[in-house]
Image (cartoon, rainbow, N blue to C red; front, side, top):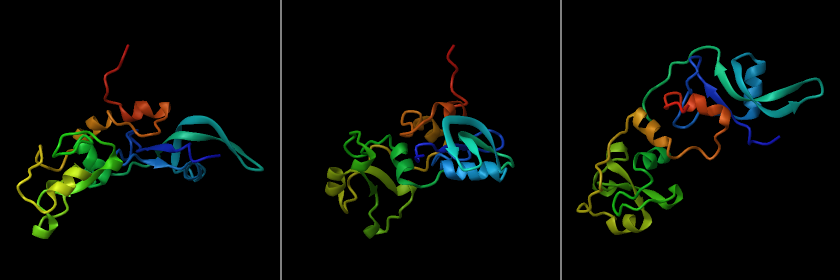
Length: 179
């Protein structure tokens, strides 16, 4: 058994508990939740977990039995910031992999700048080095806190590394159907 079998966690209304980051449970935690009857299994992998007395298919999608109120604010994380900025340096305009981007304070911390949505942009190493403590370099787009629906729309262009087919209907429930 490997960690390659996470379970997507849905709220009782069958929407993902979280999209940023994606609400996932390890296969072990998903099975524990099933046994404790905290979740209902919605979809399963073909893989099976075995014990001396029992055999269970691994859940790929589970739904909470009790609705959990969900905060609708967007967490301030590296991924969410880079997603807001389309994985593009806000100074030179080139696209990069997340490992090649950095946080850049528009107003440097040394000059009173805060670490928040409204003062941080994605920047490549070269632009970050050139900007340093300067105030005369302006990003292409003014930084602002994104709305959850904006990041959800952008996230479709950057799906998670692992996206099981059984998750698609629950992650993109508002997408146009193809016939």
